[in-house]
Image (cartoon, rainbow, N blue to C red; front, top):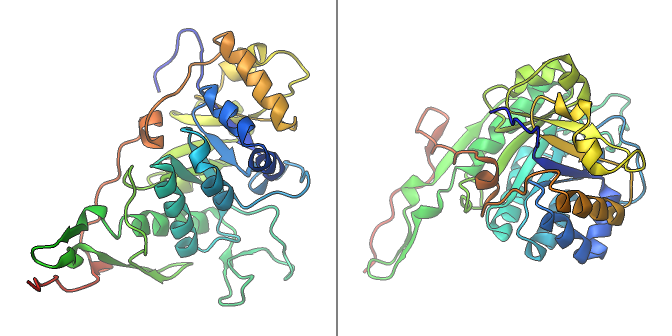
Length: 328
């Protein structure tokens, strides 16, 4: 990431489930939040961060993102963890939200869901339904889920849908792929949702420690790191999740503070303040030009992330169907 001589970092905002519920109940706040020019909004950060205090009832991130998709042209990241979210179900929900938003959605994966119940005495990934014994809540499990998501999102290319009336062929079925993923999770695509306006939802990863960083390499398209990792040293192209106290000073001062100046890259702010206060503070900071406004039709365009490459045929990726034949 190129160094900004004025230290004007791009900003994103991470909301708890309760803050997102406020947005659902008051869509005008959601619109105003995105109108400030923040790069994206994380929905449900309290699911992934151990020190994020539970602050009351919230709402599922994919439901909220889908409900709010028409209320703004801004972008969102839906938090998820293998602790609770099976990759196939998660892939379908996030892809559906990405379609409804016109390509402005991504997923933020974390190692575990701190709000998920642990009724076995040992937290494990995807064991609550008793369908499997699950897997350890470890970075390798998160990576396994990320790899499954990435492949599933690309398994049904949207351009295979041709709807050719002359031949009677609806889709070029031999290009729809069966993705046989094995590991902690097993699935056999294709996904029942075609690729989206931005190719696939953005795959982001919240890294709390060095083990997460190592596991995210080569699979995460967007990296958000903890304050502790940011303090340990510069990490190229990472966003730092930073807690701010809106009562400690203006957001302009906070954005230009020494902590943020020395962040590895851009900044995702989180705070316990009510959503209305967050919006008002960001509006004031934007009027003072404390951070640059981010624009773009899709989340990938907003962040400068390339579209994903198409899947290649392999032992685990094969055509799901025979080639369609003309019926007319």
